View 1 (tube, rainbow, N blue to C red):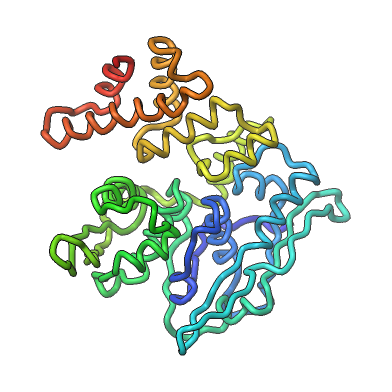
View 2 (cartoon, one colour):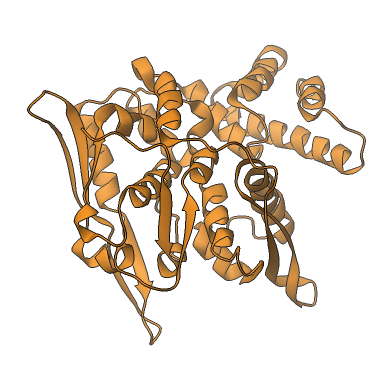
Length: 353
């Protein structure tokens, strides 16, 4: 079984980068980045990629791996469709992958085999122009799909130094529907600012943004200014990432900090997370992932202790709104320069009606 290299480079065509991402989970987006880093875009014979079963399990942050569950993972990956725009305004669609195999070799080592769809090959190999590159560790450090997509969208224009993007296009590329965060202030609070913070703290670029086009008070597009990040973290090798995640997935344990709320229903059905963990993941996402699962657990436990009626049955929605009311109040205090320790302050007020 070939070992994963310490350093991988993702090479991605611009047209592939500007496709809607709402049908992929964070783990699947990360897996696709890893796949791209393991193929050689100049050599189509590298189109098929092998992972050991433990490597795949760690990358996808899965718990136990039995054949039935592997089939569900395969079904999800093999259903991922990309749509490529045509010159006349239409589109062509196809799946990214054509084969997903789980098997053991002659030495009894279980592995996962992934092969690209023939239709997708022109997007993955032998392109000469209109592409960009980044070192894989940038994707491994990021914890949300909006963060990863924002990084790629802006990394594509790093050499230019800026990028002007309409809000319609940005929502499309991030996979955010029109009904989500309809007001710009909510889009800014829940998407733009958390992405700015995560990208600046965890990757090799940093960015600022400002309104570009407006109609009256409605913002139509944003101008992003992109710079190299002199303070980025030390690169995280894929091998180290695998080792760290292996600790979290051993014996069926998952890293709850890295689970997308959209994925919890299936994990609940598989018995891989509890109902409380489902709620913690949802709350962490609602709080813009500013706190760890461990911190959110502390807050949740305070609510259970002080106001247990909020966490029972149909009162769960009231519990959520209570969290958001206290969180938004905290944000107001931060904007006024009155709060220096957000978690400590939120902890002090979360148990009060």
